[in-house]
Length: 199
Image 1 (cartoon, rainbow, N blue to C red):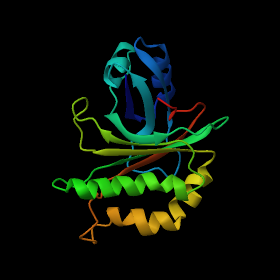
Image 2 (tube, rainbow, N blue to C red; image 1 turned 60 degrees about the vertical axis):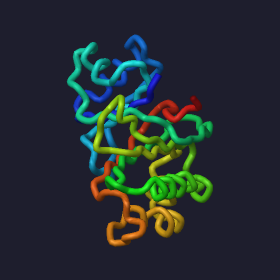
Image 3 (cartoon, helix red, strand yellow; image 1 turned 180 degrees about the horizontal axis):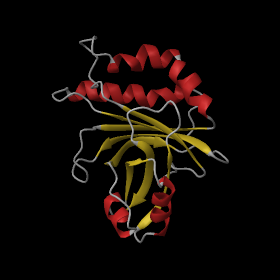
Image 4 (cartoon, rainbow, N blue to C red; image 1 turned 180 degrees about the vertical axis):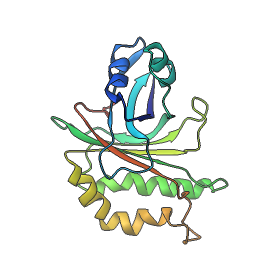
């Protein structure tokens, strides 16, 4: 069973979620339109856990193929119970080719340290993209769940740990740390149910 993130056009996002729930070999899934403030996406995001690709699930349901799909190989994550709807944020990023494994591991460690400093992060997961299942420009997917949008756009994005320890990895003008390519996908949406549940 693999967990996937797929980027969709905004039209008929709900139909993809229903297809995931109804499809054979699918553990679960949901899709919804991205909220204002998202950037780099295609209008909607589909999260699905299945032993088949999202493209196969969509084809069986008579839906267009997703515009971009990544298979996730989790590095680490944590499930935190949260009742009711939640905001699910997805960041797709690509580490520059040729970056040393030492620097990649330091980036990953700083991302995974964020929940210890930022109280609004509930469940979270850091994954590498499984290139054997979905060859992709993206190398990593950093996901979180929040009780509301303000938890992401307020404390998370404005937190000192974010700006002093994590943001440097995304700054190409810092030669010893700027290892993340400028193109990013930062999308967030509402979900009625947990997405980052314990494995």
